[in-house]
Image 1: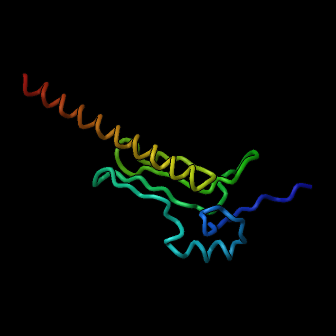
Image 2: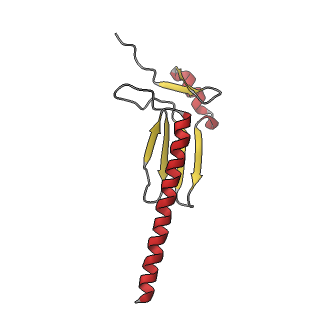
Image 3: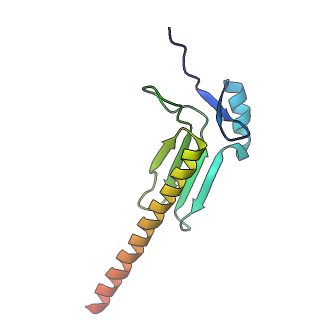
Length: 122
């Protein structure tokens, strides 16, 4: 019989996930500095956050544990999220999400400027 997958993880000194029991995970989780990977404000209303979750979010299928999450808060991409298995993938994913959020913000500005120009021509 196949042994169950570990559910809880902490990060080692090199930000690599290490399987842990629930108590060890909870103690690790209590320290806020252990969760953030990166955080970027796009505007005062749009924010991109990438964090270490530490709980395997892979519920089906085989593969490495999914332990990191990037989410956009605010704006047209509000609540968009991506998940990853490694710190490096989470850093890369954060940068991609920031680029996407900035591009959408630039397009919104262009759209509003074009609408104002059209309205002033009337």
